[in-house]
Length: 459
Image (cartoon, rainbow, N blue to C red; front, top):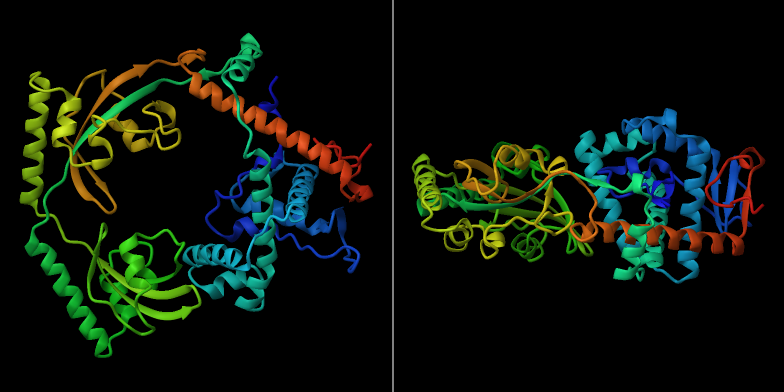
């Protein structure tokens, strides 16, 4: 049955890496008829594949901690052939990737690489380039091709759907000994009480930022002040530096201020969910802004934490005595707007369903619910979240399902996901077979004996 079980390099996720290690696949491409390159091992449409590209893929996988002993050059070559096929037909289908889009993504990846390695100079040296411009030129086409590839894949499967009848037939065709086993699942609900930050503490932070702002205007270094005072873990060590555009995922309040300032201007203190900030814009490059910022968050007093704990303990006692249900207490008392109206029930961020498979839960949440029985209410738990700070919560398990063999009626949503994925794989396989037949493809003799998943040699 189950094409789902086939080993295929085509679905290696290109978005999970956080730095430019993703792009050390370094796929140089050029017009085949215009330029001949030594070491060409394959041609797909207007794209070429070099033997060195495969070497670089192996180096990258090893650098990421992967086990290259189980990956063959033939598999990597097959993956590159697939990528080129997608990119070639993306262009044929008029899928457009703008230079602005490529540069924005490239900037994000370079920023991540700088954060990991320490400086742009170290990034340039790591990739053995002459300077930053050489580095950017080297990866621009690689980023563009990766985007073309992903958009072509998305286009192929965008309209693929499965009907209830298809899901039923898919499940019936699974051999008895291959029916999936789903792990134990729980439905979890919580009530959150946040300690109150005093107005006095908020004003204290605002006054400190005003003081820092005045010192910078009088000649102090913003870089040094950010290193000393900023509480943003992602930028404080590099002087609060951030490069962003309007699509960068920052909170609205931060963006509004950042894009309202002129070069060299320093904002007054302003508030976001993370605390209070000041921003200094260094450069404006078209739609992109380079800035530095300092973040300081008001501190919660021990007295405020004590009051929050006493409040949540009182709520817990009422639930245990049966004076109010957990769901009703969440609706009336919880200070988490995302869950209170749903009786405190948490949604699994992966499936958007109120069920969590225990073995796949966030470790911290697992530790809090693993020992709870159904309808048991935990003791108050101190938790902390960026943008929220410390707070108290109580948790209960509404339902618990033990590990079991997939049941069509109980596990329909999960089975539907598997059936849809299976149909998407078959759709891509059919598309690939058709496009291979109509596309110019040339394979070097050294790779013609590879056992490819697809018919690249057109036998």
